Length: 479
Image (cartoon, rainbow, N blue to C red; front, side, top):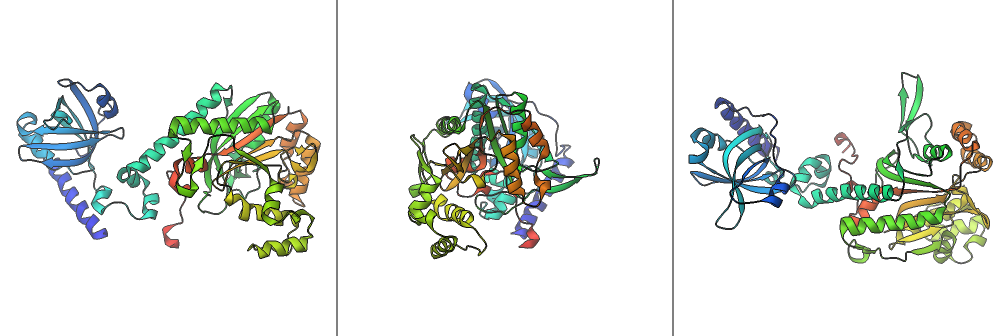
């Protein structure tokens, strides 16, 4: 295939040299034009038009030539006649290849077969393509190549292009939804002196101007809560988080997260908010409340199931699970097929059961509530049971889509929770955040929504790499 590509490249270089010999520059200047989608909407036979795009099809018929231009918004047929564009321009057109970018102007008409077409009076070279389009390689079948050369994937596969257009529309709808509800969009630091707000390994770097170590953020939570302290009552941020962890079907080290905070509310307001948000996106962007395929089809119409973490574990592992000794729980978990280290306590064993045996079975939208408080140091404990946190995790198709909390706003309890989490490493305690909290933060509900996973679910994709334009990949030399 490499030899074939080299042959195509040599042929295209030869065509470039022929164009240059005729006085035509292979890379042209700006070409003000009408977008094809707009032209199609206002088409009127006999009117003038000026469009530009990638030449995706050429059919030479002697003294006339048909072609198709694609400008990213649509395709449109063009028609050239030798006696209209002139001998030199028509001859030069013979040295164009599929993939070249040109601009054309002329008059609109309808062919005998009923196709809307532009009769070209003049054409302009904009950019010569030296490598062929994916169709010349018999399609883009290599999955890794599709990720590494996403630009070719977007050319060859219209459904992939549509997926990312819908992703953009989804993000726009989310912003509109929140702005209409009185939320203000804010931006908080991605480069932080201390990565907090979640339990994850950060990417570390050195800020030479300040002679200090810094980290890419793993979550924006602690900075957004500082804004609650400042008196902003409805805020959100839609941006990147970075976690220096593994690559798999549902994880990419750089991912898009929506975080929402609203003062004077709690986790119940977040439940109503995320349900309304997802339904709006499904209705307006995807036009359907049933998404996915086959047994994995998701029905988004409410009501969505709500069940406690404890009840789910008892359903899977037995009603006596929480009365078992650590040794008995470990034995039962291993019998269920889990690898459980000998030094894990009951809490860690239970959460492994939840993550490996239960969460993946929750296909339809499910609010899992009242998770162990020890796992969630930034959430407020439930008033009737301080061992559980007043939270939910929204799980759809076996994936956590949106964790939400009634936020911890007691600075003394927050300090205790941080100290338990930090153990002997007191440097992990964010003293600046605790100082902010001591100035008083109102009661609040907070929530994160994983945008990449939400797009996966609504579009029916199985891998997170399919919904990220340029996903992280292992270097080629690692095989």
